[in-house]
Length: 112
Image (cartoon, rainbow, N blue to C red; front, top):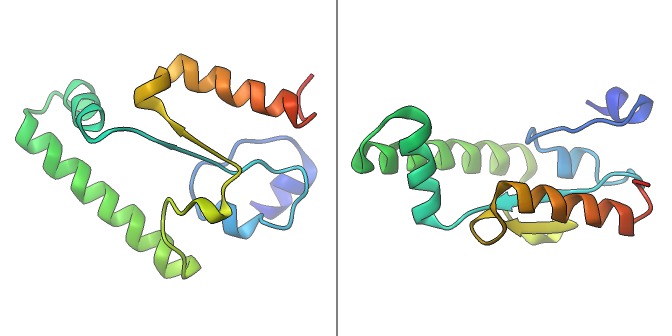
């Protein structure tokens, strides 16, 4: 991950990259989250699950992510301290979230 970030522009999803790459000047740390109901609905649509199974799956995956992140970083998953930008995709939608990110990159001078 570090070699990739040193050598070229890339997107790294998860993998504790906000901590691992915290000293890189040209890195943007973004956390995208959604309201509970929207997360459940998206899982229902994506995996064809009923609401109860979708909630269980969402809780299972979030527990795995939270535990993994905390174990390897000693920090809280989703904590804004190590983030440059937090986006609630329930408010912006997926396309709107992309626009927010692109605008932020332009403001920071990382995208023309």
